[in-house]
Image (cartoon, rainbow, N blue to C red; front, side):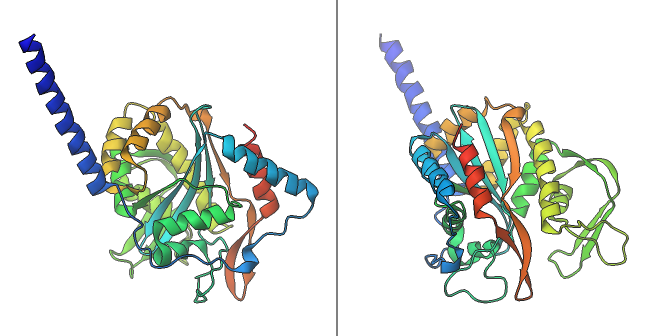
Length: 320
């Protein structure tokens, strides 16, 4: 009996120390308290959508009622460059259905804010620098007609490169010649990918994700629909990355993410969600684009959201 008590006590102490270290590592490296937040968002009035008819209103009522009873966890994942969100993904995960719906939000999406009238400040990618990651949650919830955004996950380019390397590289077939140089970037950016099959390491993977247009006169490919073309390429990259991650590499990817990802998810919730995510299959993951179209206003290109299309998207999402 004494031996049993000794073993139990020693085991309990070891477990407590291990758990304490885990919480310390999480709070030190991943847990974030609203990085960069300076002020509360006051949304401009012209963002408020006009619901066109009773049918759309009934759909919206249906969505909001189903949100209350849904087990869905909604996360905004953003890739950050400097003080702007370069990539934004709304990720909705259903533990009961083992499905993940990923919606790409163009960085030029129109999101006017009172008091912010400078060049480019009516684009959603400017929100992070002024309001932090929690401000991004508010902005995305606004765009999605007050659908709750439970958590944010923020990763910078250096972190994205490390995560891609932990996957072992991402296989991609590149259809067109990609050439772009920006000597003013720090460090200078140089992208050159020949058409064909590639396994992109971390540095090259980030370059592929950043690519949108060719250097004039280089002969490289420019996406005809600008940032929307880049988003489609990013989605193909993510599908390939997810395919690799869902293999035996998942533990290595999670370990790397601890170092580079910032989030407001509590550790105990993260562990619970991670256990559920391990059961997801590739065919349970879908990708789509925020409904809308590109338009020019006052000499600036914006992605103007289609609120009717957003209602239809959310209606389908919360009908399952």
